[in-house]
Structure formats: structure tokens, C-alpha cells
Length: 110
Length: 115
Image 1 (cartoon, rainbow over the protein chains, first blue to last red):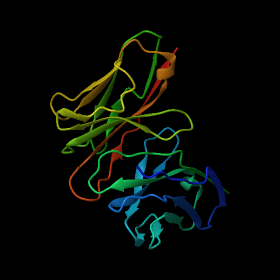
Image 2 (tube, chains in turn green, blue; image 1 turned 60 degrees about the vertical axis):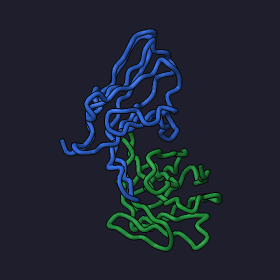
Image 3 (spheres, chains in turn purple, cyan; image 1 turned 90 degrees about the vertical axis):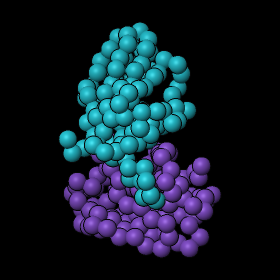
Image 4 (tube, rainbow over the protein chains, first blue to last red; image 1 turned 120 degrees about the vertical axis):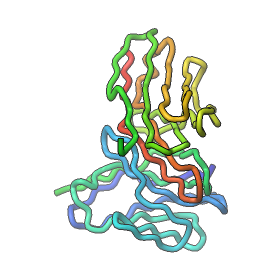
């Protein structure tokens, strides 16, 4: 399983763009990169998934360089409600097991 | 319901007692997972069901833990002779296992406290 490294915590002011980078140096060829968000006392929630280049949805963008050894989750114009823990997970195509690290605790400040 | 439902939301039990935690997955989801999350940590995989059978129970910490899904829908996680170290948030998730983008939908969890 590919090991991931993320910052333990980040602070941001409301309205700013936040970029959270995850390192996954030994990612497997068929692994996708998936990001989950978890609010306190709730289960994780899927945000976005990608294989390479850039993926964008209504919540976030995901940038994956050509070597796929890292990925960056970009949250545009964060609000207080974006305060949560964000997890980066390599996930094999069709695989069932999610391996969570400690994630990045994002605190959005007014 | 629309999402994964877990009951109870909170459970306090005495050391040595038996507990059951229930999970109602999203209708039509054939895959069901149990995870355990300790404070400050990410969720840890316990067991995976595909239909009625446990396809992978490698994450169960010991034989005090057992889970069933007799009709391929609702699942129950059972913990015998509870210990204080079992205190954690127990999360259930379900998914459609087909295809490349296997998004797992998590419930709100059951917070278990063993005193």
C-alpha cells in the first residue's frame, strides 16, 4: 500500500484559497487518488478523485502532476464550514479497502 | 433512508459486557464496510462484506469482534467481553463496488465508550 504524507494541520482565513498537498511516492500504477472530508462527530465524506492532471467538481479541484508522486487538493474561497479533517488516499481501481492516514486538520478563521 | 444509518449513535457499556452496533446501508449497495476510529486518528478498516459474506475480515483486532450481514443488507458488529481499549467511534460505510470510482458513503458512526 502506498504511504501518504500530509501536513498535520493548516490554518486559513475565510475567503482564501487553500491548497493541501499529499505525498505518495510509491503509488501503484493503477491507483487513483481519492480525498475525503470529515467533520467532527461525522463519518468521512467523499470529495474528489483523480488519476492524473486536473479534476474539478463543484466542491474542489485536484491537481496530480505527471509523476503522480503527489497531489494537491484545492478548495476555492473557504468558509468556516470547511473546517474539517481532509484525508488523501491512494485507491486501487475497484478496490474496496480505504486506508486512511491521520489527515490534515484545516481550521478556517473568521 | 437516503444515507447510511447507524444505531445507536452513542453507547456506554461496562467493561466485560457484550455490545451490538447496527448499520443500515444505502439501499442497493452490495458492499458494506466497518471501520474504527480513535481520537486523533484516521478510520481503520475492520471488515468488508460483499453481499452476505465477509470477503475480508483481516482488520478485526481479535476474536472478541464479529460481524454479520445475514440478508445482504443490515449488518451488526458484535463485541464480546468489551475492554476499555475498545472505546472508539465505529463507522459503517456502503458502496456500489462496480467500476473504477468506488465512492464509499459513511454513516454518522456509533461512539462506543467502555467504562
